[in-house]
Length: 56
Image (tube, rainbow, N blue to C red; front, side):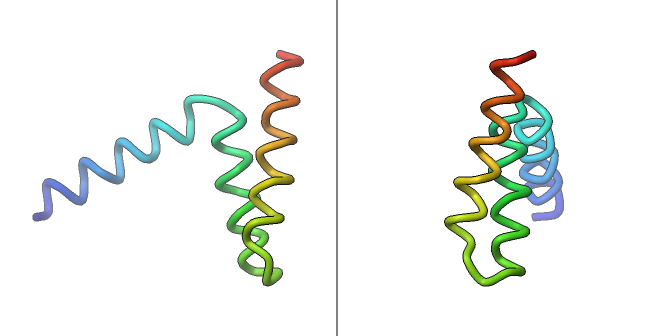
């Protein structure tokens, strides 16, 4: 069980570090959850992350 949790945490960390779109979506969803609207936060974060991916 402990090994499975460690694997999932590592895989998630690598996925989040892979591209700015995914990172922006995760961070935006977290901020949106605090503000009370997770989906809007995820949309805004993903859009900003996509712009960063496109520009870089």
